[in-house]
Length: 349
Ligand SMILES: Cc1ncc(COP(=O)(O)O)c(C=O)c1O
Image 1: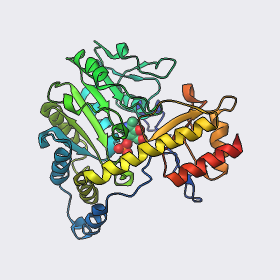
Image 2: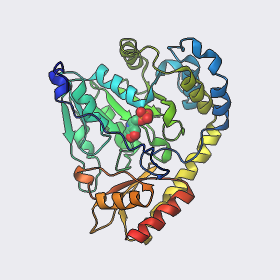
Image 3: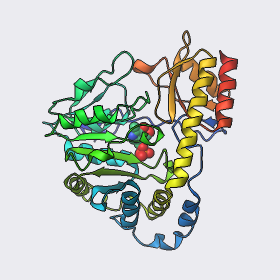
Image 4: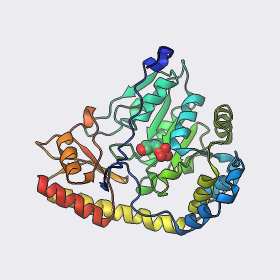
C-alpha cells in the first residue's frame, strides 16, 4: 500500500477472481464458464469489426440493447448494457445504496457484494442462509434496505421461486430489489415478468455464463425506465464507452440466436443431472442446483483437500472458505469433462 492510500482503500479486502492458470491445460471447472462455443454468428460479427476499432464505440450500444430487448420481449428503454454484470452491479450499488440505505444480502452469495459495499462506503446487512443454505425470505421483507439477491444464488445454486421473489419485491415498495440473474437460464424462474408491475425491481444479467461470452464482458440491467435512467446517469459519470465495439457485435449476434442457446442450456441441464448421478454413486453430498455449477462435499474430507487433490490431477474446481469450506464448487462441463472429473474423484476417494 502506498503512503497516499485513502482510509477506504486501506480497509478494502478486494474480490478474489477464480484462478485462470496459464501454466498447463486443466479440465477447467472452476469459474462457471460455458463448455460450448458462442453461437456461429458471433465468429463472423467479431471478425468484421477490426475496421471499426479506429473509432469510438457507440456509448448507448443501441444495436446490442435492441437485440437484448427483442430477445427478452421488453422495450429498449428497459435495458442498459454494461461491461460484464460486475459493472451493472457496481452501478446499482452506486445508484441505490448510500449511508442511509444499506445493502442487504446473504452470508453465502456472490463474493463481490461485500466488496462493492466496502468500496462504495455502504453499510452491509448480511443475512445468514438457513442450515440447508436456503434464503429466508422473511429476512428481505419490509426492510429499509436495498436487497441484492442472486437468483439462483451464487455458490449454492439454489433458486427461489418467482412467487417468493414477488413477495420480497412487493413488500419493499420504497427500496430497490436488485435481482442478479447470472445463472437464471439454467432452470430457474426469471423475475422479468415482474418489471412492468414493480418500479423497484432491477434485474442484472450477464452473457458470461449461458451466452458463452465470459471473455467479451457483456452484462446488462433490465428494469423500469426510471431505474434504467438512474443507472445511465451513473454510467455517464463513470465510463460512457463501457461496452467495446467487439463486445457489442458479439453480444448482438448472440442475443439474436435464441434457438442455439436454448439447445445449449438444455445440454448444461442434462450434464448437471449426469454430474449429480455421478456424485451420488461416489457417496458425495451436494446442494440442489439450478445453475451451471454444483456445490458438493464428501464427509470426512475437507473441501480444500479435495480441491488440491483434483488440481494435482489436472482438474480445476473452486474452493471457498467460511460456511462452505467443506465443499467444492464444480462447474458443469461437457460430458467428457464430467467423465474425467468423476474418474479423478473416484481415485481420490
Ligand atoms: C452471481 C454472479 N453475478 C455476477 C457475476 C459477474 O459476471 P460477469 O461480470 O462476468 O458478467 C458472477 C460471476 O461469477 C456471478 O457469479
